[in-house]
Structures are given as structure tokens and as C-alpha cells.
Image (tube, rainbow, N blue to C red; front, side):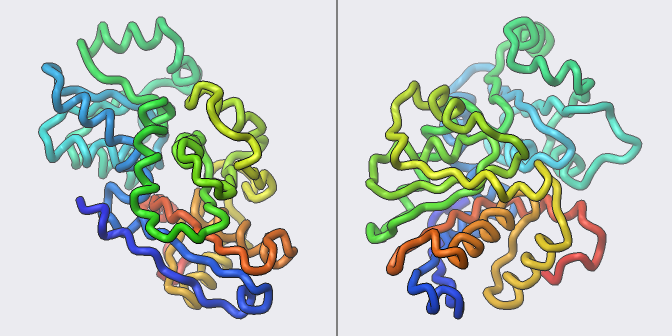
Length: 299
């Protein structure tokens, strides 16, 4: 895995010329076909801890289409770490493509009810996990932990151009967003939540950073969830195909398509001032598109 494989690509579009703005993409999805995007960064310090431990075991959480689970499974395989995935919901008759990948990479899957899963952050639940699996490093879902945010902050090492006025990212757990806010860069950080009714973003950031961030650095666009997490519409999938046709930029319907839709829409409505220099993070997750019907996407 080589983070230097993540180039910055400039998007050329008639809309951007008309509105006199620049848009670039940090292609974190190109780092590796599996451990792509922001996942590797969020896992970085947890993996370091596990490798140096005696137990060499990681336990983490996710749903049937979790990019985080499959990235963790793959990242644990190479250094010989044991990985255990706690999966939300009853075991299906046939595993999703994502969970099958996890299994192929050696992850032990444990399926629990949604009710039990909702208690995954409670002390009794975590104690029961350690009683079952012994000493281990427990990574919250999506890396939602101060160490995950610290790892996400390493993304800044790949941003060599200091002229960007805005850095934009899709937001799930807000861990990557918190990592961006750890750097006092003076740039406006834009969050596009992919969950419906996600009104606790600042609370999440405060949890991850210990109330240590400048609120004036952050702008949240809450209106681009397209119905909620992993929800989509024909408008969104058509937009994904247009992005591919015009810019050869593949996106996923859970995260990155919603990010780029928001950025394009805000440019159209003149949210960004002339001469804004916008950087979007392509946070990977393309494997999630495997759940779409064949022929939906052109890439």
C-alpha cells in the first residue's frame, strides 16, 4: 500500500469556468483497490497498536456493506493480525459481496441483532466482547475514536498545494472530518453528511477532538443525503454516470457521489465566491456499488 499513489486531479468543467472557480480531487481511492480512501488513514494508529501487542487481535463493527469492515479485514491480513467483525443484523442466507470479501481476507464474522448492535458502545457490551475474545483492540464503527481522527489528519500530508480555499468531504461518523479540523490550516472545511437527520456533527467532532476545534472553519451541507445512509435516487445515479462520462471519475452512491453532487450544486447556486480553489476528498468505498443492479452504472 503506497499513499503516494493518491494524485490530485483537476476537474475541467464548463460550469467551473462560468462561475470562475477551480475544483480538484484528492484521489485517495487510488491508494489501493481494497484499503482505499480514508480507511487506511483511520486504521493507521490502531494497526500500529495491534502489531506491537502480544494478542495481535482487532475487533470492529459494521453492516453488510461496510467499507470499514472489508478494509480492516484486508489491513489485518498482511501483518498476520486476527480480525473479528461484529456485523449488524442476523446472518443472511447469502453473504453480501462486502462480507464475503471480509471472510476471504480471514475476518471472523459474528452476526448480532440490531437491538444488540445498538448497545455496542456500552461498557457491559464491550466487557462481554473481551470475555469472549480475550485481550484485543476494539475499533469503534468507522474508526470513530480519537485515534481514528488522528490517523485521518495524516491525509494532510498528501495536500501539497497550500492555495486551496475549501476542503470538502463526505461525512458518516465524522472521524475524517475531525481529522481535517485537527489541522489549523485556515481553510474552510466543508462536510456533506450522508445520513438523514445527522444534526450532531459538531457534537461528534467535540467528542473526537476534546472540544478543540474552531467552529468558524466548518460548514455543513445537510441537504444532500438523498433519503439517508446508503439511500439513492435516479437523479444521483444519473449524476454518477455523468461524472464518469465527463471526468472519468468513479464514485459510490453511499458517500462520494453525494459529496460531488453537493459541490456541483453549491457552485451552481453561487455559494462559492469567484476564484475559490476547492479540493474534494475522494474517500474510496467504490466496492459498495456492487449492491447496485447490473447495468446501473457505466463504470
